[in-house]
Image (cartoon, rainbow, N blue to C red; front, top):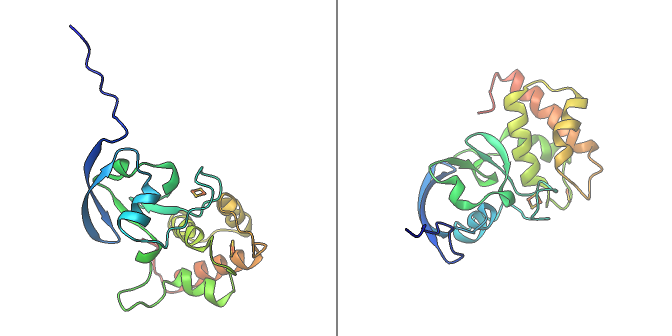
Length: 174
Ligand code: FES
Ligand code: FES
């Protein structure tokens, strides 16, 4: 009996169901579509940036079931049944900035802003795991996010401020 070849063809599409920023989406996607392309080109959530497309720069970082992941290293079909948060999901319902975003604004933790969505998502995951990081821990955790503009000092200051404020308000990073 001949074995059936189950290798997907490039043109194959799958139906996926994924919750992004609290909204459920069901879409047919090519099995080879990257998660970053799905977010940007199918859902039009262009806040997730794409730099290197091979896992080095961190620009494309999003939260997948609360964990920071590089969306350029995942296929959209791998997110089926999961919950994603992108930078568009960070602000409150009345568009007020999330405390992490507010701290970046106040401490000038960005210049061109290209790296910023990925850094904010990484910081979100970091403060959930470690609400009171030392400067060394902040630098270590953000070592996978490249920024060509700031020299990182103001990013570190912004993370410290965000951690202080979240701690003072007893607000947990969810
Ligand atoms: S675009 Fe994903 S890590 Fe650079
Ligand atoms: S602010 Fe320009 S790359 Fe980071």
